[in-house]
Image 1 (cartoon, rainbow, N blue to C red):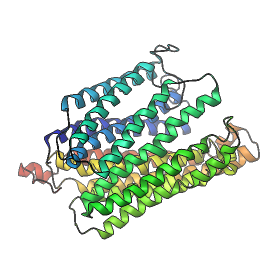
Image 2: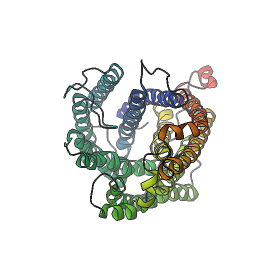
Image 3: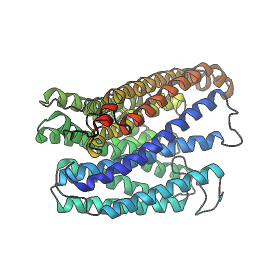
Image 4: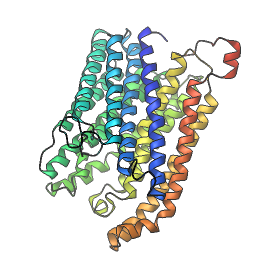
Length: 455
């Protein structure tokens, strides 16, 4: 570790991993409710479980991004973070907001209250006071990292990372605007949901992946930066107008069917480019880096993102197909693999690289870490195939033949059992990852000291 302020990242990673555990356990509970619908129906209804599952996912991923920024920016800018105190204040605000959200959701507090009660918009259900807190925390973060970069060395990695992080914060402001017209509401709602995960988050992903490739493979910075600019250009070109694939059936003009179909089809390109980038960097690299687990997660991130976000996204993005598949289990299949591949794996990759350095612990439990990769990845891939089959049957029976929703659900119940089984494998892998990262190997404990890790 070169800079003392990089230690900020460790606290962010710790909170993120705690929420990661809650998120996957919440997902497992939601999967169980699919096969045993009356489970906790009075105490913790399914809609609350789902809110906790999706909200904790978003929060822990963003905390991971913040932690990654606090870790890599000092190295890239060649100076300490502008203010460590502000970084911890920012984290305290985010933790307080997270606790407020959980208590509000679980106990349904202040229902209908404009400031204190939860809102009814999917993924952005947080009460307004929490959203205001998120904005304050984001402003603190952006000031802190922007000042660090402005006073230090500028690189393509920090430039793209800052562009993505500023975009993330600014687009969230649309969550405060809730027009009475439902079509208009959904149009602006997608400005957040789509332009985050298929826009600015891709910039964050590309920059962190570029940093990891630089460190793990030893490829020249110039080569990495050229790839980075190509990927970012492709992501923005396809992603912004690709928002149109959400406008097909919400009351917007018909031309969005063509714009959405064409540009969202092109969204496969940046994900393919990221996969090619990762493998080409490893192939060209001349460094045999000791942290094999971080490299495995990096390559897995690029590969699974291409299939989850790219291929599975393309499967139902054309408006003629989407007319039938929209909102079925095919959407769930795409969503699970896309998020796991692109963003969950990315965070776990940077955790795997940074934490041994921050904890001064190398070697660490790499075998367990890599075992967790194969458990989580295989579980998620199996879940994706299971949900794809369930969604295909659901689409045909419900949307084409017109059978009743609940009758169709009974006919695809076997797939929900398999989904639960695969979710159990993912949870085991996630807990194994957390154990591998935090619990030192026995020989390190016995030795009493650890060698300084290679960077």
